[in-house]
Image (cartoon, rainbow, N blue to C red; front, side, top):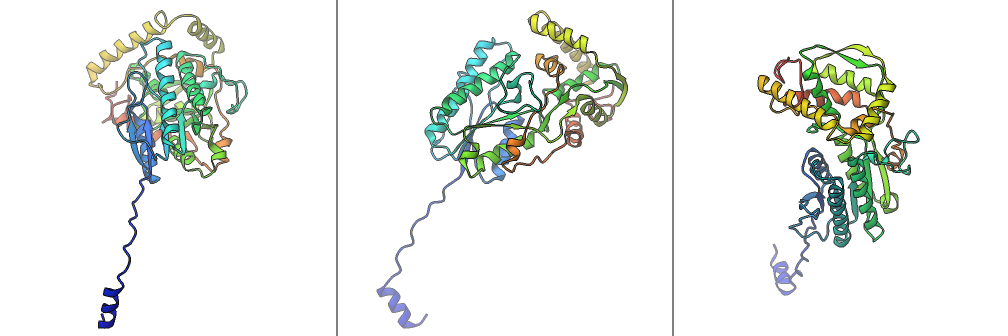
Length: 373
């Protein structure tokens, strides 16, 4: 550096550069642990948001050990309460959790509050495809509890919480072992049959991959216009609702079974089962049935070492979903530019089923997974 320049620098030093602090973008994730929170956390991370988890205390309140101020979004994924707890207590806990999380988002100044509810709050759809504004008529204790929790969030919205509600249809995907996937364990109790009879058509079911639900959460969190998302609910499903028989045939093939004889649909039998479900308490009907299934599964697991798989179970919700078509209008979310990564469930189900069978969560006729019987 020339002498004159060095002298000028000594006489007129450069002013200090202003200190710029890097602001971290983060989201707060609340709810019971599991595959859904894991998928949502991964999707938020890919979008550039760090995730801070706020577990839910037994009283339904979020236990937040970090400062929530400055959170860009708060995402509530619901709370799993014990099935043996009475409906009123479960509803109180889950509604308290939803309300407390919404109040947290409002007080923290979050730009978005996303409550992941369920399409089951509609009950049996009165119009198909079912739109977000349809009457909410939940049929079972679980559906009523989920609706109570969503109502608690809407109450906080009226107090200023920036609420957006997502109502996913039937979920499937890696790590999810309940719902329709758990029903596949019934085939392990059929005495080694390779050909499994299936129904002719069955009700139309609307599924959504857990990865697409996570992407939908990120989509509404990042949407630039509050007017499009705040104070609104969105159905989340794939692009092609299909009859149950098509889903079942694909799942059986992935497990190594062969779809066998086609069974006729029996509307009178379904109606009789529904009558029993509606009028007979669980302790007198489904409780004994599920007890026998669990004992049979334990004997089978002890003989084959299939300790990782979950016993088959008959759920009230499943019988209701078997009684009618359930598919939903997802055009509201699509109008925001959202596109499902897995638009057709029959293309994504085989990979999911094979992964669960390899993890010994499902029966399989293939070697190396659950032993064939």
